[in-house]
Length: 424
Ligand code: SF4
Image (cartoon, rainbow, N blue to C red):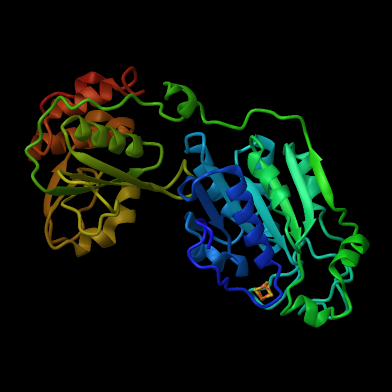
């Protein structure tokens, strides 16, 4: 048995072209001399995808139609020398067509093998957008009336250096080898007939004749080689301002007495700096050697209504960033109060800091009423509220917050006089 397989008894129906795809892939991989663990096979939803467990390579099973996007992300993060292969059906290619075209346009370094048996085999045989006109399926017993996309032509026009269409019978490993050796994006469309559905409804059809009648020419289409897409961060290391890592790494230079975990909800109005204040708190915590997460929620109309941030600070790594029972809730406006009032009423303990302009809901938490808005103004009330919370709890040195403000884009805009010792 090949070193690329864990089990040579493939899980497909008798006569299914998927057998030939797997065998040809294995032979092509053996031919280019890679090791099984240098290969990442990303499969989509469909019969082809149940082959995952048969491969001795890395395997990743994606959502329907998303395997090319998933594989593109994997390929962009890998060092040279790895081979990323996508197995996808014509249904998945239909759903994820834009992902395929973008990966071709960008020349992402991966090989896509489209198992085109002209229908969604796993869900009972419905037509895809690659189903040729006249082909009968579960929901088109008279034959599909729409013309199919010519996937190879679309992908070639999108700029892929290597595109091929083959019949899914016998050994087509040489074409797959060429695809795997292409620098950048390669796609091989394998025409097949699903013996369970396609043959049942189209018993008279022969694959070669079908390809000719459908206007599916077989062949190879190439463009001159061009460099595969690489992330700037991988090629040269991250640079500030490139959008990938806009912020410098956080140096630990403060000390926090926090032993366990502390969770805060900060809620106010959109446009009043809630999310940025929460991010600054998280960075201040990291500068004090803590792990920190921040999760934001707000309406799709980002400029009106509430804005809520959940922040977790912890001595140990945080594996879930949601806050179920906060230790502290900070409310700076009526929008924030409306958004959080049910949670505040249900709080059995913890501390609620609330702006003095607001009604205080019934709660099991200790209530601290403070003048956030009047002292710092609406735009900076959230930041001032966090400053107050740090002074009153001692969770972090307030100087850590001040330093994080100075390192943020707010440095020139926030009036520094708000960072005085808060008045009760
Ligand atoms: S149902 Fe069709 S596509 Fe799926 S394994 Fe069987 S023959 Fe192949």
